[in-house]
Amino acid sequence: GGIITQTPKFLIGQEGQKLTLKCQQNFNHDTMYWYRQDSGKGLRLIYYSITENDLQKGDLSEGYDASREKKSSFSLTVTSAQKNEMAVFLCASSIRQGNERLFFGHGTKLSVL
Amino acid sequence: LAKTTQPPSMEAYEGQEVNVSCSHTNIATSEYIYWYRQVPHQGPQFIIQGYKDYVVNEVASLFISADRKLSTLSLPWVSLRDAAVYYCIVTPRTQVVGQLTFGSGTRLQVYA
Image 1: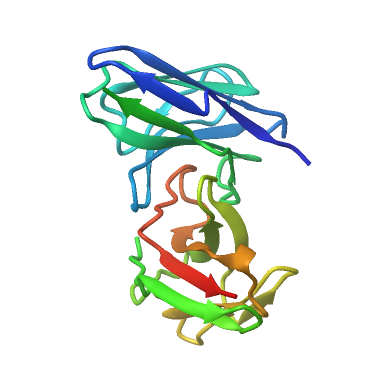
Image 2: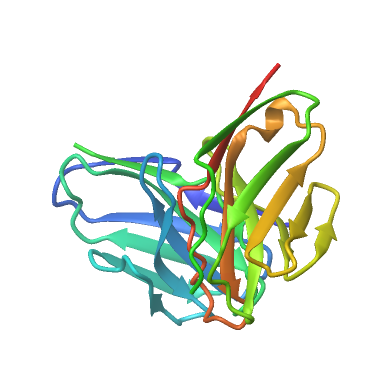
């Protein structure tokens, strides 16, 4: 089996700050995703990547950048943190494009002061 | 794309069988049904997927009505560890990757 590791587990930022979240997977999966989950709500797709150096925007990409420099890693940047923002960011991977069995990390919880 | 409707919450006691329903009245012939669950402080976890009839694995079983407008996830003998939010997702299998839409799900509370 494999694992998806997200770092950091908790992230506290200041309004206007640029913040980067990291995700590593050792499944050797082609496709990786970033989702945002607000308290008590479902998941919304921010970015996904079907292979190294590929980036595709999801429904919620505004205000975020992403980077897939290696097959095993996918990072997400909040370009300007919003005051009082609080959400969990979930990274996931799947074996290939079109396979809907996703494996998720435990999430990074973001709080903005 | 089909929209899904699930009950917002359910309750059960340990040892009971739990059936979580999902209505997808506009499901298209190209669409499959996926179930995930999410326990607190973790990401969602895949449970089962199906297209029609009946699917079973080591975790759960999935019954899909003949017209495919209703699916029911069945969890036998639930334990406290099954307390989670259960998501029903309908999507074409050939859809561009990443288009899984997680709604609000069904929150299952399990009592000892």
